[in-house]
Amino acid sequence: MVTACRIPRALALLLLMQHSIQVITSFSCLPAVVSKPKTRILPSLNVAASTSSISTATGEADRAFQLGIQLEKAGLARAASAAFHEAATLYQCYLDHTAAASSTDEENISAPNTNIFQHVTSLSPVEGDSSPSVLAVLAYACIRLAHLSHDAFGDSRAATRLYKLAASIDPLPSAVAYHGIGTSIEGSCHRVNDEVSWRQEMEKAVDAYREASRLGGGGEVLFHLAVVLERLDEVEESEKIMESLRRGESNLSSLVDSWGYVRWHTRRADPQRLSLHRGTKAMLEVALEAAQPLLQHDDGLVCEFGVASGRSARMTQEMLPLDTQIHGRPRN
Image (tube, rainbow, N blue to C red):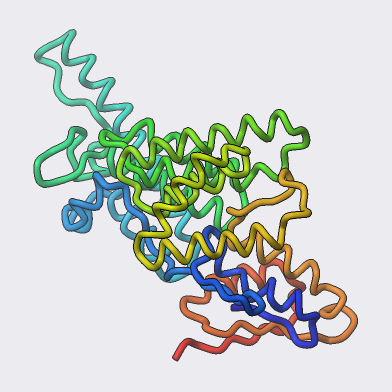
């Protein structure tokens, strides 16, 4: 939670809301101070079942992949992205040369395995009973890169491309990839200038959410599907989904209540300018831009309350002049 001294109440609330980027998970009739579930790594379902196998893999790409996971958990987004990118590049080289070597072997049975990238991974190129394939781990690396692109770097369009790549190469495509396609498409829709293009993009998000739901994405996917259907004036189907969520678990019913609050307070806004799925960096940019006069002319401070890994504090520092003071209070 980030705030600055002596700022207007509305801006303070905006800053408080920066941790509720993708979904609003609490609702009150009081001024909105909303929260977000703890940040979680959302694995490709195929990879999640074999986490122990990945952690014991010993190749160069495997180590880069493991490092990316650790760095992301530590809140070091740029370093994590670099590690995942290295892992993905090496895995792709391995797969390309495996395919080339297989083609050579078919033509010349006596030819030895000539994959010069054999050393980059100890995983199998094909799916096994106890370990994921290189393709599955590559898909997971793309999912992590997509999440970082959207949330930490503010590039939703790059995230969309990466989520689509993950869905296309994963031997068992997961709901996570398609859910990410939907949210990242919505996250970039505010940049679309005409209504026809906006509707086309939103319909693509609907298709992605439907596929994520078919793959077992759960209540949060259904909630996002219902919201985008309502925004496209497909109210009947949206209301049916919302009603099922109202009768479901408390965390899902609170999402429906929260959407009612957001809908009411944005009823006069142009739907094309609204974005319900902007990432942490994008939300911080909005807040800090509004706070610039206070920081530049009133010698203001930037304070973050509830520091965990320091991830959002680092993002804030990158967007501010070097001499701006940032103070953080750790979580109890």
